Amino acid sequence: MSDFISRITVNPDQCGGRPCIRGLRIRVVDVLDLLAAGLSQDQILEELPDLEPEDIKAALLYARGKLDHPIVAA
Image (cartoon, rainbow, N blue to C red; front, side, top):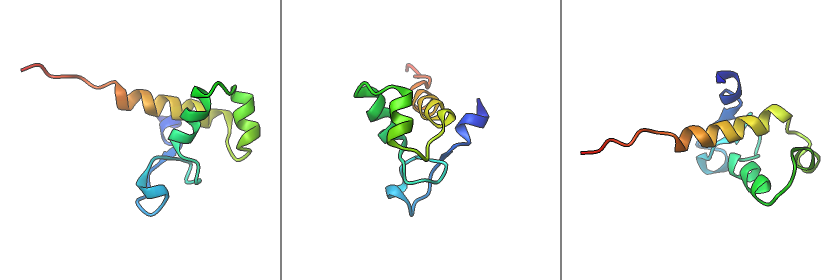
């Protein structure tokens, strides 16, 4: 799984510091938006030819990791 997460880069000087795919100017949120709009993986790869199938999986795993955190009850 760490191989996939290493595909996500964060650079304060690129895309406002938002997470991107492999240093490209393709944000994780862009990939998630396309998936949410109903595009298939093949359609996304056609729309963004610099992406690789592993990049889409990395975006999903990254988002999952951001949402899956423990909540400490007081």
